[in-house]
Length: 319
Picture 1 (cartoon, one colour):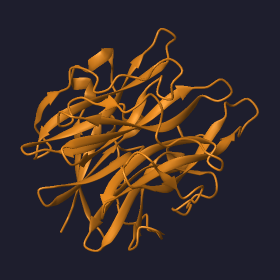
Picture 2: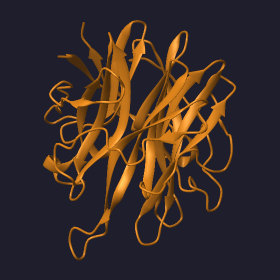
Picture 3: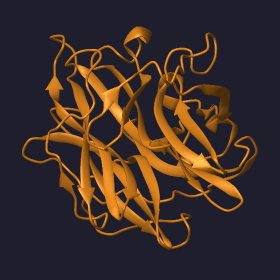
């Protein structure tokens, strides 16, 4: 069993000035390890003239002790998409992966809809300056809805293994009204795709690779994968699809699965043991995990209450 030591919250966005008039929220922290520090990208929020949120990507640079803040970005890492594009209303999250001298940023673009609140797709932006800024390879997505995945494709996490790009992502199975007067709620599952170049992807169309624990209305989000020894470990968050925002027992928690072949995954949610600490920042919710290696250690970043409104914390894998 993997054992983790929780180190508490390490970044609070309310204590810093964020770009683009953003306030609060440091959602889905994703790490890029550099020579002397770690740059952690996150999604933060501004409010438009209609009172609706717009998501932007910012970053914080920290010493490798993951305690000392060096600086917080003073501008958006990548602007929102153009009028009518898949990422018009924001990016949340952005996963970064090194590829030669470049850094590939896989974005989850959000756009508002009429009958339901939102749709998403995965885009690609590339950095030529070691991850400081990113430029889209084009205005459209590289992974989106398809014949048997009709909506809500997003949350891509990419690893390059034996010269093959692997992406674990989420796909929507549909929207449902759980109560007559309630707005529709979405359900999504984790899928897998491969690519020879990181641009052109082949999905394992509509194959849910992680089994449900809460039943068919379980929503699974934000997969992240790390290899320890000969085994691959996936962390993700999961919740009920309805009444999850205020009902603690129905909200996000961190799940886990393992695989020896990158194809078949065995679910084992007892492994993370990242239960919230009563009365603290993660007491009611643990969500949006990201696992990475740094100087021989494995760390897991994650958000707490209110979907990361007050920042993110860290746990360390024990030997």
